[in-house]
Length: 171
Ligand code: ADP
Image (cartoon, rainbow, N blue to C red):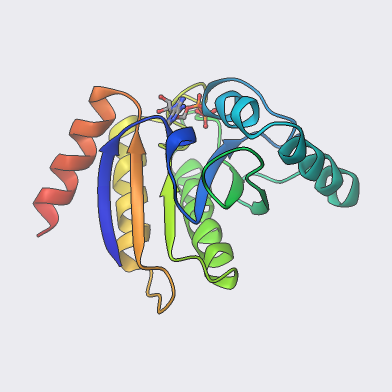
C-alpha cells in the first residue's frame, strides 16, 4: 500500500473513498464533518439519517459508509474519533479502531484509494503527534490486496510537518 501525505481540503479529493471525522449522531457538525456535509449535500445526509434510524448512529471507533453525494469521491466512510480526555490508553485504542475499521470497510467495498483527515485532532483535541503516530502505524501494518493507496490529508501546517517527519523516519 502506497502512503501519500498532502495538505489539502479533503472535500476536493477524488478518491474511491474519503473518510469523515464524524460524530456519533451522523448528522454533521463542525470542522471536516461540516465541510463534507456541506459539499456532499442532501443525498449524503439522507443516507446518514437512514443509518441513524436503523442502528442509532455510529459508536466511537466504528465506521459506516454512505454515498459521497456531490463530492468528487465515490464513497464517504464516516468514523467517530474519540474525544481526548487525557486517558491516553483508552483514547489511543479507540483512534486505532477508527483507522482499522475504516480500512476494513474500504477493503470490503473493494476500494483502491482512500483519503483520511487527521481524525480527532481538531475539536476533539487529540494530541497531533500521537494521533499521527497511530494513523501511520495502523496504515503501515494493514495488509491489503485491495487498497492500493492511502492519502493522509492534512489541513494545517503542523499536522503536515508531523506526518512528513514520522513517515520519513520510518524508511
Ligand atoms: P474532530 O472532531 O475529529 O477533532 P475536526 O473536524 O474538528 O474533527 O478536526 C479533524 C481534523 O480535520 C483537524 O486536523 C482539522 O484541521 C481537519 N480539517 C478541518 N476541515 C478540513 C477539511 N476541509 N479537509 C481536511 N481536513 C480538515
